[in-house]
Image (tube, rainbow, N blue to C red):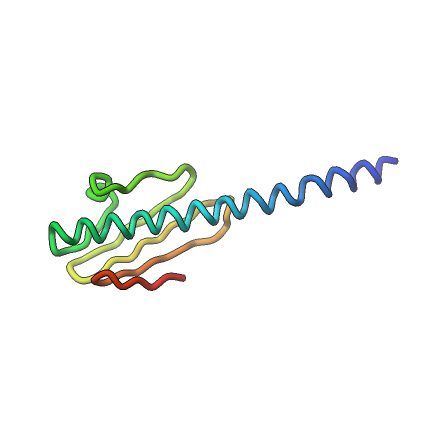
Length: 103
């Protein structure tokens, strides 16, 4: 009986862990795409990309709960790295003049 109860509880819990992981991945992707939009808007005004997150807040960058976003930028290009621990993955976008590469 105890083994059956443990099996039932495991069958209920495993899909929940998958949903949490997928939610984290979605948050990471959404956060980094939002940051890319903010970088492009910043570039229109300054003809350079922001090299940290702070100036992007006034260009529509919003915080996503649990997501760590790192911003790198210079005059020609930018890289955005986003991570959420429940997703367990890092999502990166690099951009240059509106052209994006992601992985």
